[in-house]
Length: 123
Image (cartoon, rainbow, N blue to C red; front, side, top):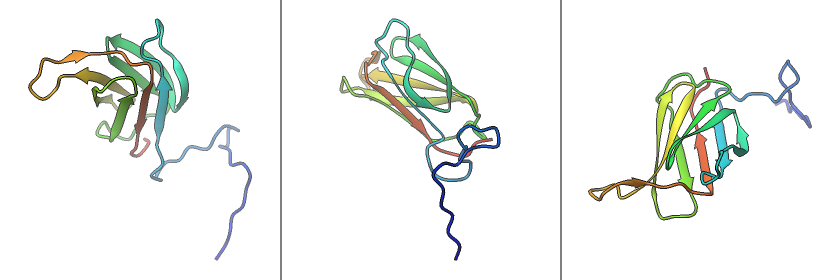
């Protein structure tokens, strides 16, 4: 058996190496959805973040997914809301922070501690 030991692994361009077939998250972000102009507090594989409407945010990826059926999750920490994601394409996903799903009147709400992650295969 061989052992590979390294302190840092970089891509051929000198940046971070991209995991392609492993089960690690392929994109994630943390942001304040209540800010006047939203931006990443921290992220991986995120090229931009948009505030679409109250409680609705789009994240565009730096590296696309192999399809638009990837599993993604979104949560906010301020309210007891229902959270959902909706892949828009292989290169973006919409996050929804919604109260009142399941037969109640639905309303979308901004949250200050928004967290998103997705798994799947990169293109």
